[in-house]
Length: 279
Image (tube, rainbow, N blue to C red; front, side, top):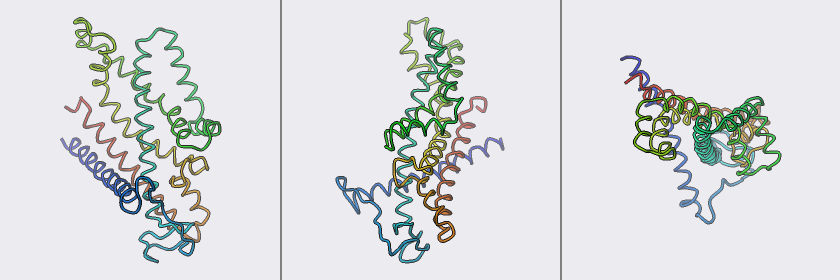
């Protein structure tokens, strides 16, 4: 019972932390499109060089300013909305592809399973960051190229989990009963397989969001990001003024760490909450 309560607290803590970040991102969108700007002309953090590297709580700035004199709070807000948008798009896309490919790897002919294993092994042989760099070098620094690179490197992990879960579910008695009453494979996939494996996939999706954020930040740090508000790109700039303005790197790192910790707490809590052996 104590273990169950502990895991429940983890999940609540994760929800609370992520909730604060989501409210922060939504507040920035409202401010960007409806307060300081419009939908046609959204607001962007203003450059003001006289405020360059201003310290926190100086010059009327809560968190200080960055290298270009922009409010660090505004830059962080833009980076948060950018990171969350990228991570949600990539995670939903990779999970969808992974679930479909994992199920097909169980039901499809042998040649498909052979190609499936080959594709997964090719992705896992090379470091994901190296594959992403090669893809970005071909597609160029754009939002579409970044999303494509992260999807290519992310779907095999979901596919392996989905294949194992699909094998387990297809061996259950009620699945055979569903087939006996005439349910086709497509309907079986959407009404039986997906609901059965979704709890496991949701946990991995929550944990996968943090992986996408870290990967995107790593590409941004290497100069391959798709936005100047990428937290990785901002960290890359902050390291050049680490001695003059250490607060920039510290605030960026703490903000990113808080988001990652919240996602991991939420994922760990969900894993135990959705674990059927705990019920």
